[in-house]
Image (cartoon, rainbow, N blue to C red):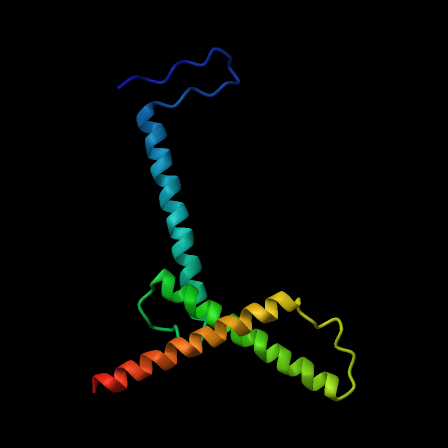
Length: 124
């Protein structure tokens, strides 16, 4: 193993060996993975129904997206109620594309759930 090169300038730090570079990289990657794990754990604790379940990142993301879509639809219901009561809701509006995407995905989810239930009924 090569030793670090001595600095030519007193203000310059010595160069790292390949082993030191590798160790730094491993530590950085471990920190990155830990940060992602902690983020998913926080997200799982925030999303209703995810508490105490095994932490699969895909499951957490899917549950989060479902919750967000449902919240978008709830927001639209509240906006419609406000409009019906004569309130100015123009500053509450979401882009039409966001609403359409949420509705479309919720419809796809409901259709998939319906098909799954039908298959389970046939299997009994």
